[in-house]
Length: 410
Image 1 (cartoon, rainbow, N blue to C red):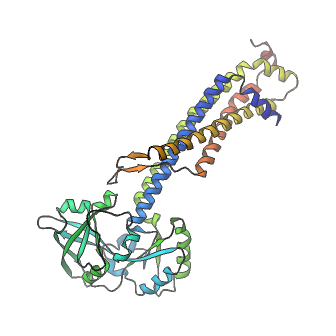
Image 2 (cartoon, rainbow, N blue to C red; image 1 turned 90 degrees about the horizontal axis):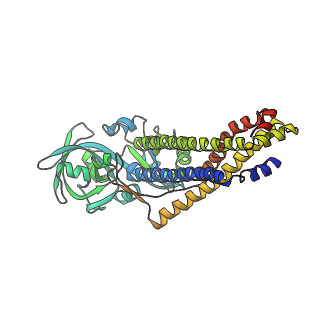
Image 3 (cartoon, helix red, strand yellow; image 1 turned 90 degrees about the vertical axis):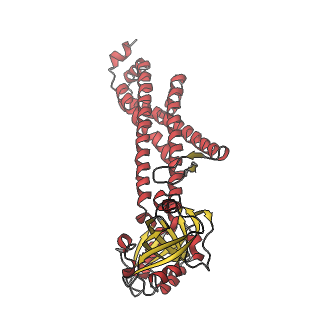
């Protein structure tokens, strides 16, 4: 306690230098709080758009292989008792909806152009639950009574030159191995925000797709939960309670196991955050080392006198470490507070910051700063740790001064 009290008085002996050091820590921590908040919001937005663009929170199939090859041969993986499984899943309090889905590749042709597309078919009444981030930019959404009508993703419509009201011809392999073709009316054009999806997705009602493919059940059940945080818990419940009781094996995948793009973006931002954190902390470390080394030089005779009076080296080291602790605490708290204030001002006064379309995205977005208690404590502890670490060299240098030379120092 005595070291902390002395250290508190010592850091204000040269107020200009201390203020310079605190400013460096404050700016660094504030920048980290802001960037961390930006990354959190961006990843949250990407997570929700991924889940609500058709992926869902959990996907159930009859085999692991479905998740790699099922879109090209869905007929091998059809459920035999899907209604019983849906009823059991729907009984879980965390489950909002269970959406049966069939996805298959097809050729879609207009009068002039054609292309390979991925058709996603779900019950129209459940589509809003699963595809809540899908935006209809032209035309209308599918209705329950619609048959042989489709919504095209914007990229698909542009590639084949389709417009609202046009009739497209779709061809695909059916369950018996034959080739089926049907004329479909375009009633809507949508965007999903992800360029990869916008360039290949076509939406159809489930009864039409099942009739077209000549199937009576689906190969995939998508579970939409009340909250994303329930994903791990519900996956464990399904894995333990359903396997072996449904009459056929079940493979369960969480959304983050299927979202390759999300994993890539998360890894990129995680690495970028670590690099920025390292650079900022490196600047802070050298600033603190410089400040405290100058303090050692200014107090050389004082240190010599203390050592001559019997003060141990450990006490000198503790004194300088305590000074570093105070500097880190003050700078860390101030930096975190400034970061939170800046985040709030940008979010509320300026409505966030517009970010142009990142790689792989079809549209830009309005970014906000999502701070959390984890951000606060993480950056505060980082400021303390870096300050204590930076004070070790000056502390060691001061403690190892020769007493006679220190007393003669001018």
